[in-house]
Length: 318
Image (tube, rainbow, N blue to C red; front, side, top):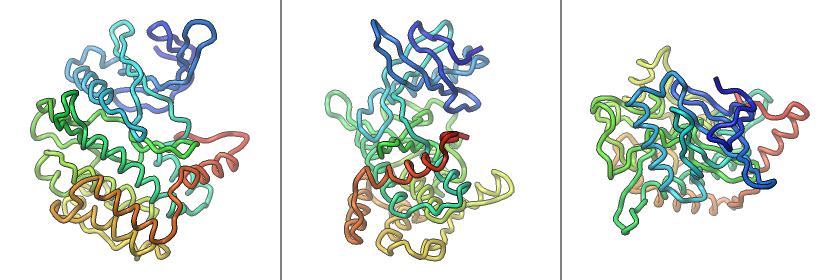
């Protein structure tokens, strides 16, 4: 049983749990090397009861393979992929900050309004990470796009330095691999599914952009876009794809910015952006039009304010 202080693969000392799910746990850990070398890393470990599940192990290996190929400042970087006994460990860079989900929760708990500029800039940086994934090429320069398929607030990390990074490509589909699961299985959280994904599980750049549009709409509005008493009702609401105008829920949001998000949420994929790069350019242009400084310090300020308000107890990560 893993616990704080445990050393895995001979050099990764676990500190505390950063996140856990049904299939894997992510630990904040210290990588130790010769002399006084050490640095914080994130160690993702398969849950012990799944180490002999061939299907999940194959998916975990695929996550490591795909993630290691994506070299970009807005994507969490892979440092290592090793074995500890019967388990595989995915070792990634440690982001000193919080997920967007955790940040939105803390804003709400402290009675603070989430600055719309903060949300827009987080979205802009996430788009740059998606651009890197969607435009990925193999070592010979051939297009080999990677579709995230799980763009949610939990998988957008915001560092205290203002850097934004996409994480958890565990459901990603790389174009150089055949489907790894049954063809009729819908991947991703139901509240972020593009309407067409509720009918066919084939991901595209537009399905990732739709999911990011849901993330941003909810962050601006301060509430869920698709609601229901269970996943079935949420699934059906997502299939209908009915989007209330952002002007109705966030009055101070500039029309130029609202239109960018609403186009990403178009019911018909052909009415959305052609690419993450196109959406990022149009969002950047909209922000310049209203004189928003596109700087990591603008992203970092709300985090630092939350950290100061949370002292001496520190940030919560639940």
